[in-house]
Length: 405
Image 1: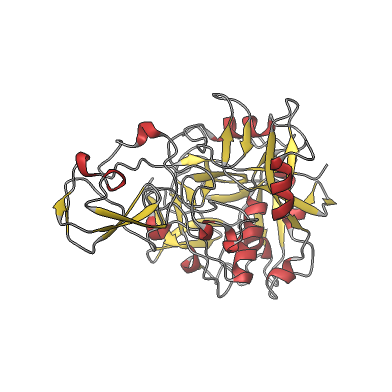
Image 2 (image 1 turned 135 degrees about the vertical axis):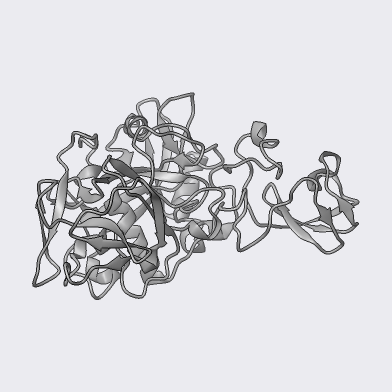
């Protein structure tokens, strides 16, 4: 297998290929160990939490280059190109299916994602993706049924930009891909619809999700074909090692313990709350429900980090990630772990995304990145704490991660 075309392609891009017991591959991007202070000078001079699992430092982490997909229905999840991303499976089942790969594989964690956010912040990366029915809202507007088009109008359709060359009203008989007398095909601006059965799913005739890796180069992190693909848009990715209960911020122990393929990420796991220090940016992990721990609240029309519970009105509220507020009276020093995990915006960040929280006492788990219709609210910083772990939908997917073997 070391001389297979897949291995050769992976080597060309600096990627890592791992195999499950059946010999099926997954492709991972390798990120060498870094200190938090290397990512932002305001952070502590210690190894970023993503690289510490059960108090042992890892030389590198492996993140799935592609969103989670499967080779057989409801089977093991892989990281492979040109595959329909697996969606409509709930939080815990995704983790089970990603871990079924073996070799230390699991689901991407809040520490992994926090590292990537800081890396994007450091390098000023803002990847595009499928956040507007097959294209990025910044690059094109999707074609729609029963619309009047004039000469020169441009619309995206199933991954490509088309220019109208004859005025008409759009119809099923005049799809851009089938009508060269009405549309001139242009550049690649989007992805290939994941499932032909979705083509007629809406008035755009484009479906929802796109095949993994089928988009243009700027759908890769840093516009680098060797880096992570589809990291924003397409479908929210399940994130492990973080949850809210009573809107209290809870993590699964120190650092990146959730990345251990045997870690209990269920509702009954060893969850800890964050108690901030009053004199510096340190913190203590304590039992959930301890007075003075960090919570998300709703104050002055913004998601706000505080040490008290919000009003539980069951409303779904959101704020642009960079605009999340802090009650500095109760939190004079924000614990550095909040920045390291991407749960609070580092000063000066421009990484895009909306941060959604359901103001409920019930447990909520996280999905990140946005989906196929979120437009400007999608992005690497986008976080969705709206639904319980049992919820499944076409806008929720996953991404595997692994460890070097």
